[in-house]
Image 1: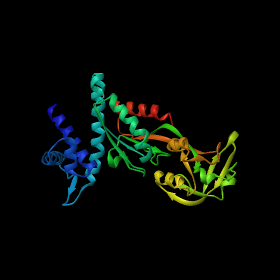
Image 2: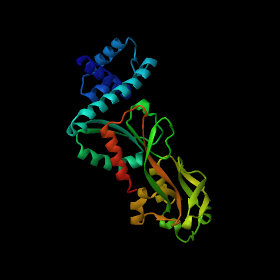
Image 3: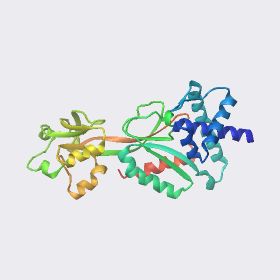
Image 4: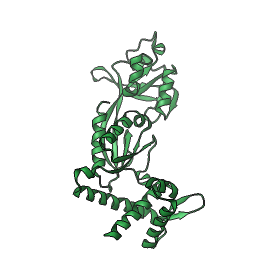
Length: 298
C-alpha cells in the first residue's frame, strides 16, 4: 500500500511540474523544496525507465514519453480521487484543488464572485483561477473546467451549457441624440465598435414579434477585448453589441443607452467543458452545478 501511495505522489508531482513548466514553481505549489520535487521526478523516471522531461538551462519540455505519461497520470490521479470520495465521509469529500479557465470579463466579474461564494461554503477546496479569452488545450494545462462564451472548438471535450447571454446594441446618449432609429437599416450608416471574435460586418438581429434582419455594420473600431470595445462605445466611437450584464451599470447610470430598443443580437451560450477521460470529482461536479445556478441571473 505504501508503494502505491508513493507512486501516486510521484505522478502528482510530475503532473504539477509539467503543468507549471517549472520545477521550482511546482515545488512552491506543493509546499516542497526544489530539491525534493526534482528527486520525485527523477524517481518516477527511474521507475518507468524513460526520460519524461528534458531539462536545459532555461526551460523544461515534455518528451514524447512524458506527454503520454501526463495523460495517464491525470487519468490515474482522477480515478484515485473519485475512489477516495466514494468511500469517504461527506465531511472529507469536499477537499482538494480545482483548476478553472474562464473568460476575462466574465471571470473577473460574475464568475469570480460565484467561485468565492463556493469556496466560503467549502473552505477545504482550493481554486486555481486562470483567465484567458483565447482558445486553450485543456490537456496542456491540466484544467478541470474550461468556461467559454460561445462554441467549444474541441469535440473531444464533454460540454455542459450553463447559461445564455443576452446581447443588445448600445451607444452614448450623445451618439444617439437626434437620430431616429426604428430598425437596423436606420443605423447601418453609423460607425460600429465590434468585438471581433463574435461580430463581423454583418450582424444578425431579432426584433419585435420575432422579426429578423441583418445589420450591415460600418466598422470603426474592432478588438478581441470586450473592455476595449465597451470603452470605445463609452467614448462615442460608435455603437457596440454588448452583453446586457456587462453594460447594466452603464445603462442604469445613463452613460450608455440602447440604440435599438426591442432588437437583440444573437444570444451566446456560456459553456463549461471538461476532459472526457477525467473522472469528475465531487467538488468539480458541485462547482459546475453552483456556477450554473449563479449564471442563471445573466
